[in-house]
Image (cartoon, rainbow, N blue to C red):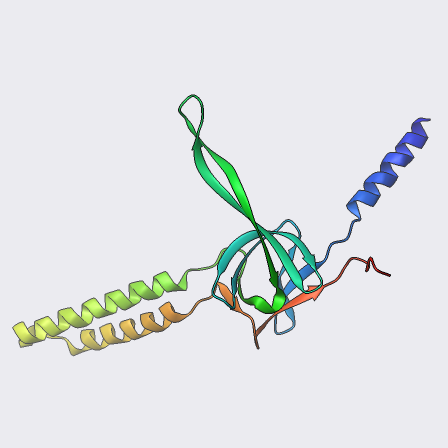
Length: 184
């Protein structure tokens, strides 16, 4: 009897873990960068300009079904505040409506570094200009050129975005069907 129950438990648990699910692959030049499947979070920007971070509820045919949760601080009966889910919004998008995907993981923030370089370079150029007007003997043209180079490098770094994958030539969102078609 015990062996029979053990066999049933193993068979049922194996069947439960083997449930396939459709998923999406984010590819860069035919190399997989990230995969998205049911239960994971995804951050997208649609062709209409809607930015959305939500949990994937389902992926079927040419559509992705998302749920965005509203998480807020709510007061309790004793006057304390807790963080609670107060609601949710369901969304459905076609894969053709997705313009870009925010890459998962941690990334170095090039925008902040570029903005710092740009600001520092502008300050050096302005200070060098003031010194040129006030006291030409202490003016350093090399410092003014270095400030201009730093400001230019900072400008181009601040424009580069390494966290968002714009779908098109370089990045592709590929749908992988892992479930058997129910109609057949």
